[in-house]
Image 1 (cartoon, rainbow, N blue to C red):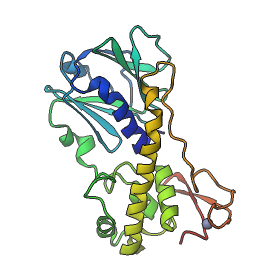
Image 2 (tube, rainbow, N blue to C red; image 1 turned 30 degrees about the vertical axis):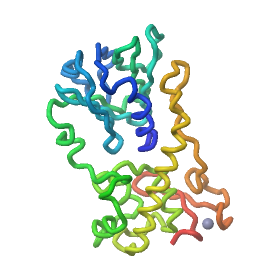
Image 3 (cartoon, rainbow, N blue to C red; image 1 turned 180 degrees about the vertical axis):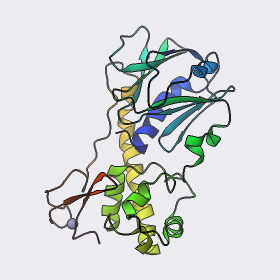
Length: 270
Ligand SMILES: [Zn+2]
């Protein structure tokens, strides 16, 4: 599933083809995504993209008429192709751009969305309730500490709650908790200020490293043959159940928290 680093890299990858460029046509081949693609999306046609930003895992492309709000869901991707091009199965929405290029939204499972708003994008219900960006200035250990007092929720679920902080998905939550030495199931309200300081740093660090490694996949967004690859990183705990901890050789455990597989080392994390 695309997580924050993949979305950030996607946004950077499509930016040269969208920023200050006119959207010439939008062809919605399959409108039934997570929510129906509204016909008002066509209000963007013949208008330039004046800003392109990421908020959580949403990509927001704004014109002077309004904003396209796009989410890749579980299996979505965007690719830039030269016209003419061959459509593939699950290519649902095609944006024709300047310079005989098109941007194709591809999503086999259709849990993503492409929406339109003619108001300020940050006031859209999907974006208005989002917590701070993990790489932004508002996010810190003391912020997590303040928000978590009295909370019994497992710390992993706490940091994966987009109302607390956006874009910390399952893989990165597991990895950051390992690096910070915190047991994922521990109640958020019982974590010390110092431990949250470490955790906030580790969240930033794991996301920044992933974005950096994503830079090498940018070419995939301009290559009509290449699927945009998601990042292969060295993972310490995620997906390593039954394997030895890289730090202490204890066997990595798995448990389900908030209906998500959770991996941890019972020796390194407490
Ligand atoms: Zn260990």
